[in-house]
Length: 271
Image (cartoon, one colour):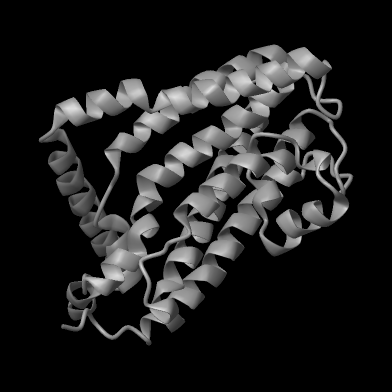
C-alpha cells in the first residue's frame, strides 16, 4: 500500500510539474490574470460594503464579519480553481474522447483526470481571497491560536472539497446527457449568492436545501458563524469547522461514485 501511495504521489507531482511548466510558457497571460481576475472580488467586497452602508448590518452581521465570511469563501474558491478547474469542462472532454487515453493507462481514471491539469492561474483568485480574509480577521480580532489555525485549515479543506464535488457532479452529468453544458455559470451564480452573504438571510426552506441537499452552507456560513458566535440552525459551538471537513470528504466520496457510474456509460468520441 505504501508503495502504491508513493507511486501515485510521484505521478501527481510529475503531472503538476508539467502543467506548471506549460502555464509558465506564457507568463504574460498569468500576469494579465493577476491584474484582471481580482477585480471581480474587489467588486464583491464593494457590494457588501454598499449593503452595510445602506442598512448598517445584514441580519446582525457587520462589514468586518462579512469580510471574514467572504474571504474564507473566496480562498476555498481559489483552491478549487487550482485543483478542480478541469471539472468545469468535463462535457467537452467526454465528447472529444479525452477519456480514451485515461482509460487505457493502468491507473485510476479520476486520479489522472484531476492531476492532468494544475491551474496555476488559480492563484489570481486565491490572492484577493487571502487579502479580504486577513482584513476580516483583523476586524473581528481573531486569535491566531493553534486550535483556530487547525480549524481554519479544516474549513478550507472541507469547503474546497465541497466546491470540487459540485463541479464534478454537474460535469459527470455529461455521461448521461452527452452534452457540453456543464452548468458552469449556474454553479457560479449559486456559489456567489450562498457564500457571499449569511445563509440565515434566506427563507428557512432555502437554508434547508443548502444545508442538507446541496451543503453549500458549510463552505463559509456555518464555520464562520461558529468563529463569530453567531446563531445557526445547529446551535453549534466550535464544531462546525470539523463538521465541514467531514461533510467535504463525504460529499466528495459520494460524487466520485456517481462519476464511476457515469464512466461506465462512456462511449468515446464517435465520428
